Image (tube, rainbow, N blue to C red; front, side):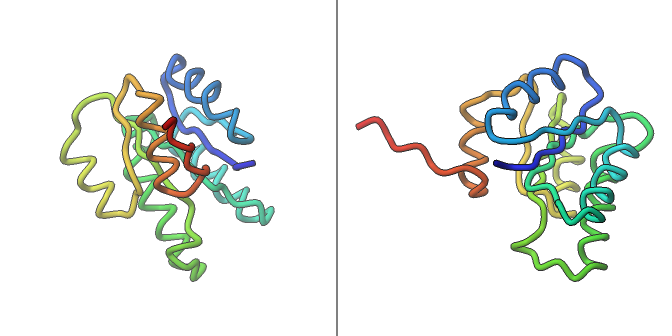
Length: 138
């Protein structure tokens, strides 16, 4: 079972993501960027790091891109190897091309546009080796 953090200020997106992702693991939910960083640090302190963080790009207090950068900086300070870092998928409503580009520079693994396409999201999770690939139906 995965340990998942969903950082999303939009209620509908939050409910949708937690309902969908709860089949893969335990989901913690936060509604802004500062809570996301707190949750990440708490998980690290408890030695129960997240496997996946879904970060909304546009959030109150601290946007997703800043949260992403803060998490990657903390991982660097703790000498966490790249392959051991938490997988981060950015969630974006608009085609925020520049922000998505910045997010990739800071080290996110993927992004998903709203409304979220479940099939594509599952594909991304398989690519990131968070879940096993489904056998093709042939």
